[in-house]
Image (cartoon, rainbow, N blue to C red; front, side):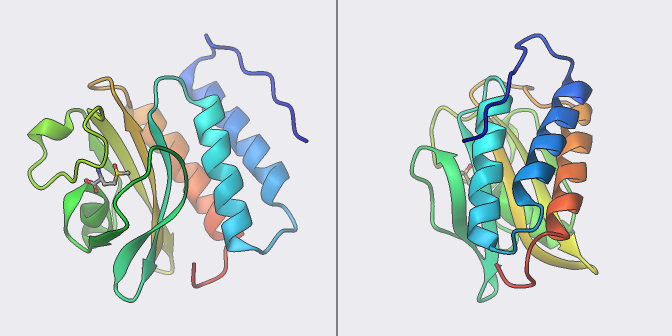
Length: 164
Ligand code: SME
């Protein structure tokens, strides 16, 4: 239904501008959380080069539970404070991990994953869930990716209900 042209050589900041514009267009006026997360997971998968997992975990019953994603089947439940995703919830802060092998407690859903970027979805200081990006290439994600994904998270929180 939606066709986007993606230039493989696009600079990172511009790439995130494109993702933002597409996510904005796809989620505007739509209040369904699953639909919005599913489309954004697909956009991230489509726009970002060199990733092997893009998606969401949402807070449910005091832990992270798998949400819409693209990539291989993944761990379903992650306690707060465990792994890179759980650390993002506990710290209420982005986790930019150059090499997951060096991250104590990393949860390996796909043995191929080496770099990971996790951004919390924060509303009024409360974590609704996280955006999780994985890559098979160490140091794949930069500070620019983190900043772009944080902008996306902020926009998305305004389009999502309080409970995911
Ligand atoms: N590696 C994550 C688990 C989720 S998967 O990467 C999809 C972590 O350590 O929290």
